[in-house]
Image 1 (cartoon, helix red, strand yellow):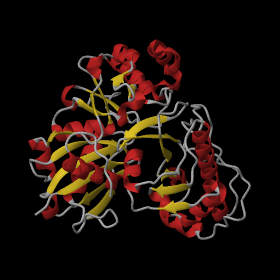
Image 2 (cartoon, one colour; image 1 turned 60 degrees about the horizontal axis):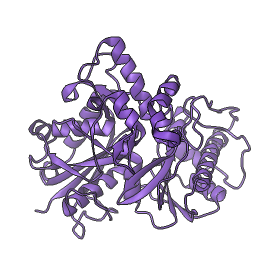
Image 3 (cartoon, one colour; image 1 turned 180 degrees about the horizontal axis):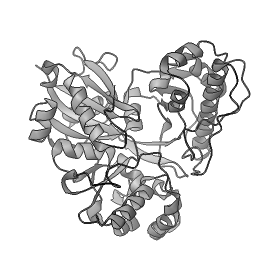
Image 4 (cartoon, rainbow, N blue to C red; image 1 turned 90 degrees about the horizontal axis):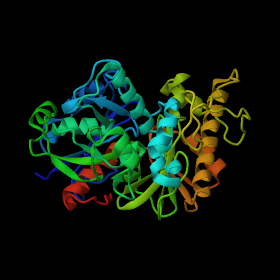
Length: 442
């Protein structure tokens, strides 16, 4: 029987996988894949063992007849979640046993970052690695912790998707380009920034491969744990937001809003843009620019469960604003549309009506989105003609109405176009087109 293609999404709140068949065959249409499964992590998000065991557990729910046909797998991860590990991906004792998550700012590293990047002339301040909210700041904190613990020998720095990809291959050399931009990978020049390579040391950094590159077969131990074929190919994935863009299949003039735990805005551009909080990526052979807020749908779960959100959303009145002007950050600090690690949430006043409070939170998220699109336009992004929404928040029609009203352009919800689906498309395209970076299309 024909091969199947597995995409895995390591999101903020859990794992998701999607399986696609070849285009033109049953299960080959992204609108109706072979299967789509999700689960929470079996442990804390910061614990890499929860990523690995979560993947093992989730794949165990997939029928054996599906698993044994998987010919290629690609993984995405939360952009910026960084881990210090030993040779062979070995997890280290505390305080380095946990990864530093994507939202963890390290403002104490601002001076060290400026020193490392000073050799990049005047352009260094606009690089995504320059932010105290970026991976480079987290890397410097991890290295400080390693020195204090006497654990610097043979240390490796790997992002979430790259570490799990290393386990699949039993080879932790590799890193995917998009996941490493905020650590100091210079995409236009295809090199590490000179100060980063010298200051961190080349030995701790991964060898970078482009998204969609085939890296080799599954290691025998990983194949046995996952119940996948020994000849299954491992494909370099991407970030979770980029994976969602692949799944959404945008047209000219479209922007992509990923409404997950955090809010991510993306647009294709003719050339990279520079600005605080921005990241430029190559996806499908094109430049993709965007930014990620620390605010997002995750804040709603602090106050309501999913059933309450669904019920209260039906009581929202988009044409009657609450006027409460909340700033629904999940914690102190923001990355985009402003890069400010000290920015405080505004979650009060809380009205007596839960529906009114939910509407105020959604209005606050909408205001951040409006500011984000405006910021992208100011920095040179093309005019926005339409927004395609993906992620869990794309299921919320009243939120869509609020956003349509605020943006003044059409907003489409495509909740079934998941990041896992984007990775399945990437795995399929890589298998068809070879090891060069492919341009996956549904």
